[in-house]
Length: 110
Length: 114
Image (cartoon, rainbow over the protein chains, first blue to last red):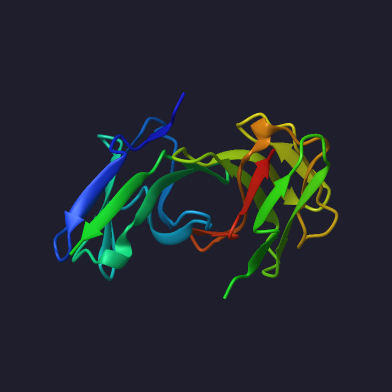
């Protein structure tokens, strides 16, 4: 039973445009969400997080939105840069353990 | 600058061999984790530890074992490697406080069993 879902396996965006990565979850007890960026053969790198008591958190080009009623969160990257090309994982915290989605591969082309 | 170290980065080994994947962190974190990731798939938690002499199995069943004799060290062992163990293994540690969570991952070990 997948508790964190990323239904889009890939996304292709032109440089300078907005990238929107989506994530859905099923467990209403999750109280904290994180986004990670991962390159092949590397460990995930933390990007941004959001507490369930908030609906938005912004850090530079990255903004995460949380819609608790829909159990949905999204990561916005604007403007997108070629260096953003990687796999992005959404994760939720359950009793101190991270539960990951399946990831979305983002490709930013010139 | 990495504060959590995994060795080796890459390992190709024959079936039946015993292997130990090393993970060390210098941050003094009590909580440590091992995740397994197959290509194109999500990261699955296979082991975790909340402190010295504490180890628990994660959500994904694994034939590996772990130990936590020192706070900074959390090695993972496979007694007899098989091709089905081929995967990427990621170690992480975490600290919770101030209403936030901080998880740090190592660079991973890509294991290939032939």
